[in-house]
Length: 410
Image (cartoon, rainbow, N blue to C red; front, top):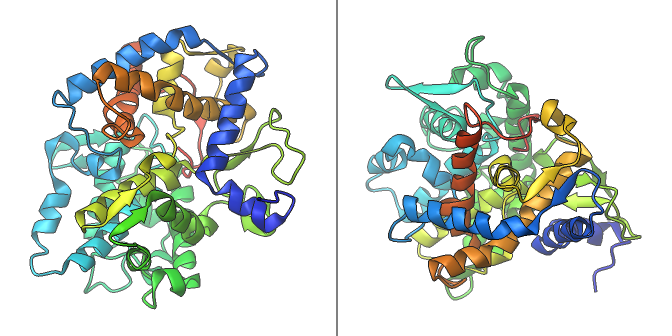
């Protein structure tokens, strides 16, 4: 039995999928009782939302062969297989080293992915690519150029030596930032990369003597049993190894809690009272790393132990479809700090509602949970549906709420 009055056990619990789910569903239960301060929940709108998501899935994937919601989709923006192009130059490199390179690329790219803002884009071969896809393409170009490597004779790696000195101007240059092409949170992104370098150097047990992100692939591979690795083991390693990189918003027993926030509706009478964990980027990173293991011949089990992702595409879907409505118009009028209780509430409701909508979507598609895990519903449906309806509702396709991020959350 976990003792949540013991600091170490409380920190460990806050890093589990069970903690994320239970706290988010607790807030959804308050929504069912009309007891939330910022949002109302309209469950009668869920069937129409499930219809919309299923329709989007069929439009995007007529055969229903849906990949995971992972960073690799963004590398193929505008139909260009950029990872495939890079991998084509790795003939003769053994499978484990290719997996390490993919770890290096994927982790840096995901951690640099927090919302770009509406006015930024990346220009590649004369074509402009914005938002998450643009950030992915920009980070891939930076990786290929060796920005994250401490050994310029081996550009395709990310290690402590390469990451630790990264300054905001290096990120700004790589992402083509200018007065006319502003990127949200440049300083935050650069700080995150420097923190990542420090975390790699501090944990040779996880990242190896080379203090390289790809060392985590080896550490996890050795923990596979009979060729199988639980998804929660990947998430646990991600949260353990990369936990110290996040801005120190909140800590417990000296541990940086990361993507954990406060909401007055959570009353538990222990050290975790008031705390709502999300670990959004860490979970999306985990989904992205799953593909690397599967391509390397390791089966990842228990994928649905992980949760949905509480970000503005999924959250925007529920607002735009009328499942969620704000109690105060000011929330739609003024920018909201990411730590505001209203944002915590929105994210928690989003995550819990993704659980609620998953089975209705599967039913409409005639698929089982095993055939259509949440990671596929996110990719084929809710995230894409959130983007589609945002474009229908608002010029530019921005989210329904303007959240002020520091470049490390959304």
